[in-house]
Every structure is written in C-alpha cells, then in structure tokens.
Image 1 (cartoon, one colour):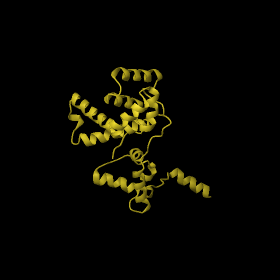
Image 2 (cartoon, one colour):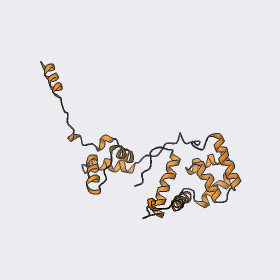
Image 3 (tube, one colour):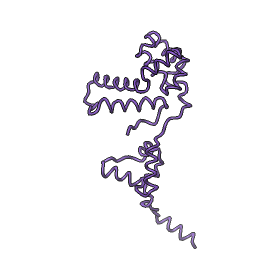
Image 4 (cartoon, rainbow, N blue to C red):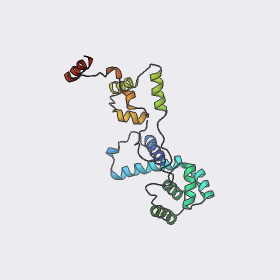
Length: 203
C-alpha cells in the first residue's frame, strides 16, 4: 500500500503515487537514511525518470506533442488527455528532444508570469482520487460479520505491531473514524452531580 499526503492536486497525486512505486521497484532494500546526499539525489532522479516513462510513454507522448504542438496552449490540451502536470510534460518533452533548453526555459518563464508554477490550470476543478478498494474491503468484512473496523485496528496492533491512529486509518481507507471505534466498550460515566440531577427531575 502506498500512502501519500491528502493535500495537493489530482495531477500531483498521480506523480507522487508513481514516484513511490518507482522507489518500490527500483530501490528495494535501500535505506535512504544511509545514503550520501549525491546518492539520495540520484535515487530521487531515478524515481522521477520512472514516473516520466510510466505516465508519458515515449512513443505515444511524442506523437501527441508533435501533433498538438509545443505552445503553452498545446500543453493545456494535453494535460486533460494525459492527466499529468504541464511542468511534467515540459520536462518530458525536453528529455525526448521535442523541445530545446531555450524553449523549455521560455515555457517555464511563461508559467511563472501567469502564476502557474504553484497552481496550474485545471488543478482546482479536478477532484483528487480517494481510496476505494480498501474502503469496500472493510465494509465487506463488517457487513459479513468477519471483522469490525475496531477488530481490524486491534489486529494490526497485536499481530503486526502497527499502532495506527484514527485520523490515519480514516485517511487511507476513506472511512469515518467512528468505523474503527468499538461502541460496545464505550460507556456513560455519570458524576455525583449528574445522579443528583436525575433524582431531582424524577421527583
């Protein structure tokens, strides 16, 4: 399971998930904490290159860029088709030799001038994906009396030493926090004042 922060855009989410999958495939067994700065930088570049190849396959992407053009407006059209950021497409186009360094810098300057380096067109109106399969699996277990949400949480702690808080569980499963709470263990604690008030009201 790959978990990434909930913040960000759909297009950033696409990149981040592919990036983590790249690490999973390319760098299994490597501990980032043990790497020198240059080694860590190369590892991150490997993962970024993996993202480019996975999300923008060379032959098909190059054909689309050549057919659409390399103007900024052309990349706006391609963004909806390829579901990646304009910045990523500009860099991929440069890697594939579809644009030169001067054109790359010109496109990035245009984005900066328009205020698109942080928030690009289509970012705000495109909904971020949420986990589906895990939520459905949890509901299936609960509906068929196999495991309740709280039992799943307890087993993760007991068998796998994973003590996950409710906020994290809710985020990665897209389920309400209440789903992982055992209501049968909750009780109402009345103070002496509460009991006195109850007696007064009953009289």
